[in-house]
Image (cartoon, rainbow, N blue to C red; front, side, top):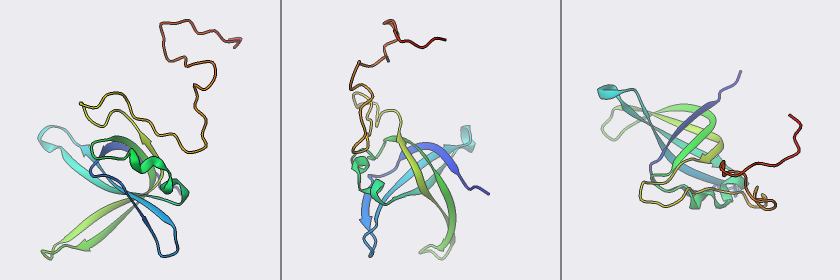
Length: 142
């Protein structure tokens, strides 16, 4: 069986990187997702964790409050007793994928993107073909 949960949401507070006693890096961020419509709409908060070398990369610098993200990974649910004595439920996602989507907020200029260290830019040679007004020359036979 597979337990994969994927959703889009908004970062609720800036990401933090901490280290376990064994030295494993853990990036932690809280992501909000609105579910339902109209007066039935609720905000679902999910704590997201990314482990290992991916947590040590530059992603932390882009996961700021208000940034829109797509996350996917294994979902777990736990219960805890709140300070007022009531039982609360917490959702946690062990992330396999965290992608930046959209802008951090309306006032920010340009779309932020994260490129992993060592990855090559897709526009390094030959330019980008994202401008649909210019012709696209390639040798694909179909």
